[in-house]
Image (cartoon, rainbow, N blue to C red; front, side, top):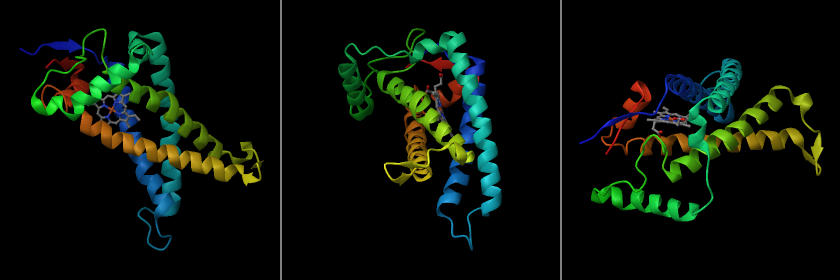
Length: 205
Ligand code: HEM
């Protein structure tokens, strides 16, 4: 019988859904700035710039909320990674996602009070929250204040390199969201993880 464990405190849920809305707004306006034909844009250029900047600044504030929240509450412990046996744990989880889940096997690292994330989830969340998001934020701030950027790096424009870093991280994070949505359906029921992020309770398998 499935039981419920309280794993998602209210502040993480508020942070998460604000973050999700802002990311989607940033992706839509970012793609519009990047690819649209100036004569028939997806969203006209000027409003895209304005909304991209507003959503970006809001994301920075929300990101600070996440980092401080993880420092001052117990949620931060779920983001600590031990390298001991990591490869083996990652392989076990990947095998479950590739085969076990389709055979109705039990997950090798079920969630509990001490382990909210399985090894693959943990590595992905650390990469997204502590590497890619800071990089997209720092490069975004630099592009907002281009006078901060080093003029040339080995003869290549510093602004161009910053823009490439910003776009690459934006692309990586967009792909993450798609994968994240897919794996969010792997709960006890397809809807279980989505419900957890609304009511805070994780439903066990
Ligand atoms: C439409 C957008 C999104 C949906 C539907 C969604 C869905 C979910 C769900 C169902 C969970 C709980 C299950 C789990 O822990 O995996 C979750 C947690 C999480 N999501 Fe998302 N997500 C979205 C966007 C994002 C974005 C844009 C990011 C980061 C860039 C993100 C990062 C996270 C993190 C770090 C957690 C764990 C939070 C914690 O408990 O500490 N999500 N998401």
